Amino acid sequence: LAATAPASETEAFADLLLACTAFDAAWDETDEWNELTMKVVQHLKDDLHALDRIAVLERKASGSVLEKAAVLRQRLQGDRTMKPESIEGSECLDVPMMLSMNTRVQCPVCMTMRTDLVRCPTCRNV
Picture 1 (cartoon, rainbow, N blue to C red):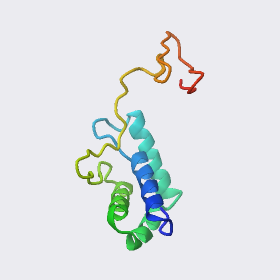
Picture 2 (cartoon, rainbow, N blue to C red):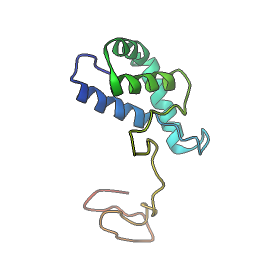
Picture 3 (cartoon, rainbow, N blue to C red):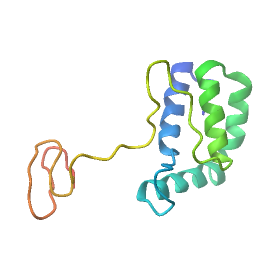
């Protein structure tokens, strides 16, 4: 997280990191999403030294950026299910929702449905 970037850019980057580290407590560690979030957390900690960067940011940030940085720090320190406070009137949804269709046989863009894997020419979805 860049402590020198404009607050809106820093907050957008924090949102991205929170989405990438959001462990879904409804599933266990073998869930595909949770496996990816654990890899992201490990990469952020070990390869990017994110805890050091977050410490710098927490000394300079305020408001929602500070809150999100604190949540990210807690996640990197092992509290997988830590979530930011929801904004007034909105629910905090940082884990992906279940798709209403199987996108491997039906394209969500063009709605093509086949028995084999769909490779949509528009969105390149598989």
